[in-house]
Image 1 (cartoon, rainbow, N blue to C red):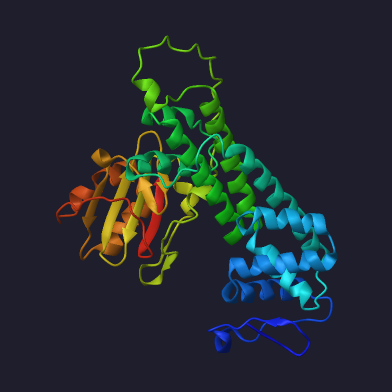
Image 2: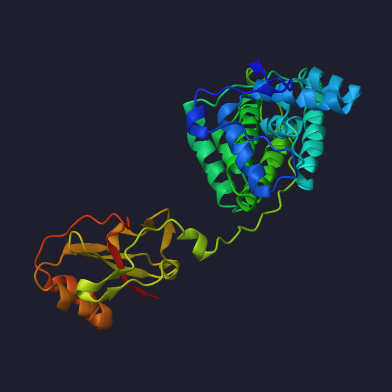
Length: 360
């Protein structure tokens, strides 16, 4: 690093020609200018440098006690954003009011985390990464959080027979995930994810405190009477809206060559059958499920035993007209009129798929 004649530290970046010079303002900046500046620092500043700017900013304010607390805690307890915002202020910028609130809340949160860590360090050493044996369990818990289903995670932990060490790893894993989501996602998505993750983390913490998990050393001792557990009140399963379930579905909205238009994907949820046509491979497919179809990602969840698929061939338009306009009897016999062989049904929809109709 070098110093200008005014004594300000200038950050040198290997990508300076690509990202442009450091954003320096001597006035009140807008929200967009603040966002653009933070993006620039994200690529041209590391966490340790940012922490030094944070300390310099607090020193400039003259709060010796706060400077001492922040230095004692170290950079790992404070957000990267704090240092970037501090750098802007040191360079002369006046920020929107909410940015100063960021600094105050970020400092309070960082110091609180540091103080908690001093109490927790005696309890156990911070665990490392989860091994592959727990990948299935972790995936199920992630689904509960991402879909905000509100499902109870305790049965998953009990089935996996997790140790206290593993349970703590799960907590640490999702604490880190919450940080990533709050850093990279929109505030709305981050709020939903954080709320669901907090519920899961609290459940696992209660699970640990309640003595439901067993230390490896205890498992080798003489059997002990099973603890009497209070009956757990069943939690109502959260209903996921159809729009959210089909948000990632890929399909073709229109196919003018045959005058076809897809139905709305949300209409698939809960129906007993879906008819769709693959325009690339000329496949007619019907997927069925007696208790209602569901969707995960861009794949329809169906019953293989009562679903069918065939390549139509020359009479494509006539066959599709029967599908769109015919009654139950006509639909029941339609695959008998197609002389090509059966094709495996996957239920996976794509950008070549026209969603023809559903059956209630």
